[in-house]
Every structure is written in C-alpha cells, then in structure tokens.
Image (cartoon, rainbow, N blue to C red; front, top):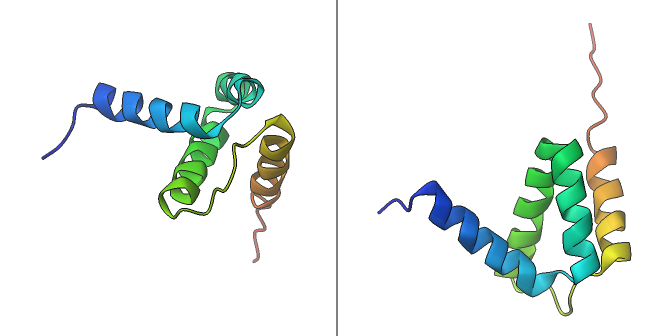
Length: 81
C-alpha cells in the first residue's frame, strides 16, 4: 500500500521534529534551500538512526553541523582513467 507523497513528507517532518532541536530544524531548512540533495541525504540518515534506536538524545545544531561535515566529506569524487 503506497502512501501519497504528501503523507510520506508529513511523516518524515514529524519524525525529524521529534529528534531535532528548533535550531537544528532551522539549519536543515536552510540546507534544503541551498543543497536539496544534501538535505535529503541528511534526512534519510537521521531517520535511519532514529529507526535503529541509535539516537539517545535530541540532535542540536552543533551535532547537525558535525553530521553535515561528515556527509559533505563523503562526496569526494575521484575519476580514474
């Protein structure tokens, strides 16, 4: 049974609100405006952590910045010929 995209997005936002502080949610919104793909990767990563029960406390702005820097570093593309 497929949920419409709006339902999926609202569920995703609800879960993110439960795990992020207000400042972290604001930062995620700004990242979404500038780098939508990175924001989507971040959201999926956070939801996976939440579902796996690996989050013991809410994620504040500093922790979110740390996760963002880790995800950004992983985008190091190297082309070998």
